Length: 279
Image (tube, rainbow, N blue to C red; front, side, top):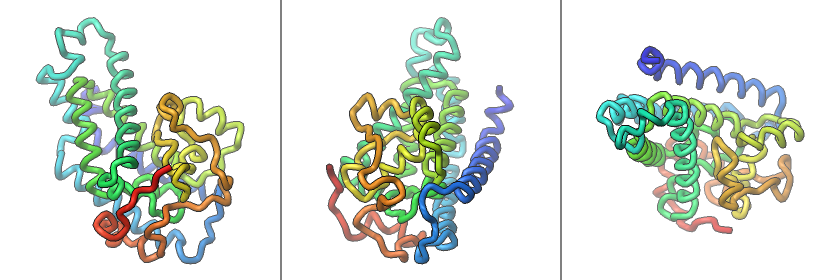
């Protein structure tokens, strides 16, 4: 186990790169929506989206060399958090600590996502994720660096409060990255398969609705990994109004192809368009 945690960066990168390649090939061979849009072809979007994800990965490593998993080990060694309170970890099964940590970290990300849509100053950061004009696997890692820093801070707070085991944090991080790539992919999942997967996983069809230009659809389906929170808190939407192949992706702002460049993406929160899209 220690060897796995020590090699966490390499393990996560290997899994992420492999899944990216798998979903990129899958959505190329079995696309849900048309991909032949002249002004926003892959060679225009992909280098900028990938460059942004690399910037974010480097930023996180500079700010927190230990990573979230290493931070969890640091917290556990010092006996901090609920799981370490009054020797709770001595009678609470380790597997249950891991499971609770994964579930509560996922709930925290759902809550964060919801708040980033509802609080105007946070929406200015998050809306850059929604200004992509195409929905595919690269959209899953297209976030503003400031949002990435805030998200990291939220995860560290949850890890500290729980005293979450490092292996639980590692599982969560791998799942979050894997499902973000999967549910942002332009993969044509058969309806029967999609209906089954939605019982325990956010699917591309479910999350695509969240990237609709219609505010009532943008403000739904906030889950990244588990689909249950949307159902519990009443933010679940089954299908888009216009259908998956005809719905418009993005928001009303920043729809020019030039806005797909990484330099324009980084400055979007600080430029025009201060309103927040509401239901």
